[in-house]
Image (cartoon, rainbow, N blue to C red; front, side, top):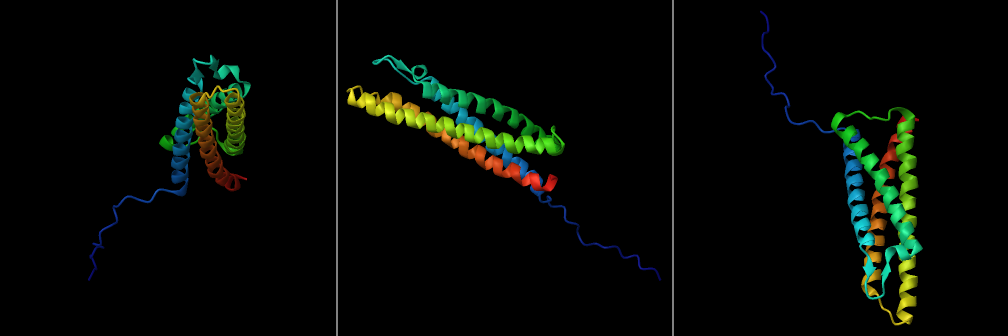
Length: 177
């Protein structure tokens, strides 16, 4: 007698759990999008910061110009990384393969994050110092410096998101070394 009984237990057809690599890539992409939004709003705020009464604009203050340059450079790097992350999440493959790609992500995130931090610090410092000077001269300009501080705050949030992204990119380094 042959035993023709087949295993009739239902196979699990539920969705499989995504791999850690997929979760890490998705979180990295979300951090890049978040950084993109912070930098975009910070750029819009600082560029539109002006006071018609005192005829002062952001370009009159060197620290604000530096802040804009950090935003633009961080924005360009973040756009590149967003494109690479989208490709990686969608296709499952990386454009920059090998150790060089992982090192580019890691060191790029580190450099850009601290660059964004320096721009934010320059903006906060200039706003605080100049607000005291203008307040002593009885030219309050609260709206002008408030917008500049808001832009600096968003730049600081961009730094935080990029710094967290650099932590995720550092996880890939030991596996590849």
